[in-house]
Length: 451
Image 1 (cartoon, rainbow, N blue to C red):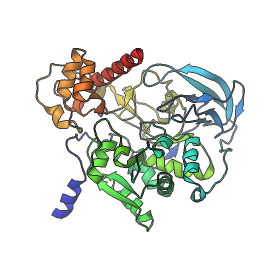
Image 2 (image 1 turned 90 degrees about the vertical axis):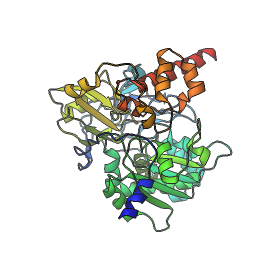
Image 3 (image 1 turned 90 degrees about the horizontal axis):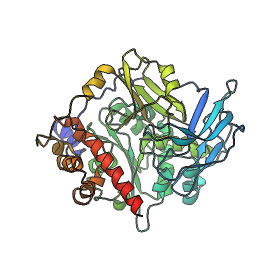
Image 4 (image 1 turned 30 degrees about the vertical axis):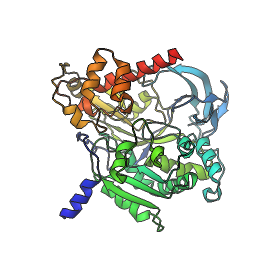
């Protein structure tokens, strides 16, 4: 038993935090389909890279699954109709979780339609070449479903001189409240494995490792029961700790390797994908279909009917909240998880491809976050928490005097992936992560103006 515990402890990384999981509300609940909203809002930019370009016009009828926008280059993905209906507007400006409005296609849903997916053509993934698989992934409109929303096909084409040897499939889901990946691993295991095998062929990688936090051992067992006998795909339990699901941390936990500062996993021969991404690819590619829906966890003390819902892309949050219900004390809606997610200012914001969760907090929980900010007491708690060994205290002090370029050049600001650990442990309640986001944005703007 002692050796077993030692082995488990080795599957981790240094630092990090242990927030209360709050997963008991939804971890046991099977995926259920959310009804189709009468109006669907499909932003043309739901991914890293160039926004998609609309293919449809106002008044045009579309069927569910039909392409409605094409990719605007390699680092871009197309959009597909989440419902059968009629296009009411193209390039309409709609609110986003980040704040600025963005162009979108608005579709009025046909209430009498069956909403069957009427677009697609069967194809055999085993007979497709690497290039055909890459093209199929891009045509599907797939992006990272863990939240980053990076176009999935781009990872299949690493820069010259880089070779992908290992796939890491991220099933950690370390954010509090979120359980959509957990349910996907339990309910869509076959599709996930099919997607992994396709991506192994597309990258030429020799093996794939599925990493799952050890608070989801039922998922580990379900996956291991269905793994192919060739040993190319394995499943490993890692320690439950936040942010275990960050790709750099998971690589360290599973392989003991570190991504170099300023580098990418491809620099050390690794590509990281989310389990939900793999499950969707395993479903979509054999049918030549596009991404039109995803599993979203809706949870939190402010939700009356929490659960894991299959939600059409473009569903307005207002409609989603009407379906699940909210308590009288519900006061704050977060897109994503409470550690890295964003509070939305409008319920007209639609669910996009990268939305893995909607967390609704009540007034009491919000008040706890609104405590006054005090000066840094140099306690070092943020240094002990930072999983990539930055100095959040120093970065915060530099941010307070607007030394944004120094933060980047001398203190590795861009290595921060905004996990929120430093803000979580700070006894002075300093919003360090917010400071870092602002600093990065200002540096990007400064470079753009100088170009």
